[in-house]
Length: 311
Image (cartoon, rainbow, N blue to C red):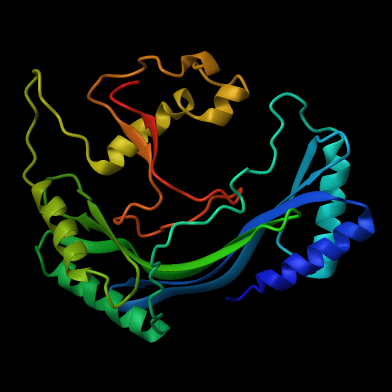
């Protein structure tokens, strides 16, 4: 890992003791990423970054909490963050004040998180140029692929607290997107895109992304007016997630506790949707490329039903 969690934990405890802080926790991640873009067979842009983000929470003697964030995990950065969070704790909320998760030291799921081998920048550029050329060759109306990108990321996540909890895990993934633009005489330009995600560059299904972008684009070319009427529709996964997000405050626990939801704590067990709808938070699902074995409070992840047959 690019971040030594044991060292950060030891430093945080030492600094907290010096500041007279007895209860605190830290959660965050560090990310190494590189992405490339191309334009008509030529390299257009290469970006690389290493970034970290850490949330620091400190409780005072009255058990109210202050929260701050930092990108510095050296001793100076940790001390400043702990001190700022402690000062903020005296302005913390008293109703539904957060506390340590009772499961922050419980065993996490024994799952194999795949960390793929990273590709070199020339490999990424070569692969993306090849994908762009193959997509352009799919149909004479596809004039360009103006929006495209191939990126890979490695993420190290951690959580630690003053009660002795220390957790960390690592994961990686590679993503590709291709978005076309058409030009046809007498017709408006049409566009369509596709996105593909994998644990590693080696396992990325580039051809599937090319085929999907081409199929969507070509299907939009011979467009006709849609007669008025009543139609049965099927939402794409992306559209359905967007729709669910629009209504998420109905079943978001923090929104409910903060009185920012149409639901209340008494809404538990009541019907809020069609019996056809069930929603679960399942970070360990085998199809989830970004599997996390614990959340930002150190709680082990598991399948958690939010809405069960509309209830």
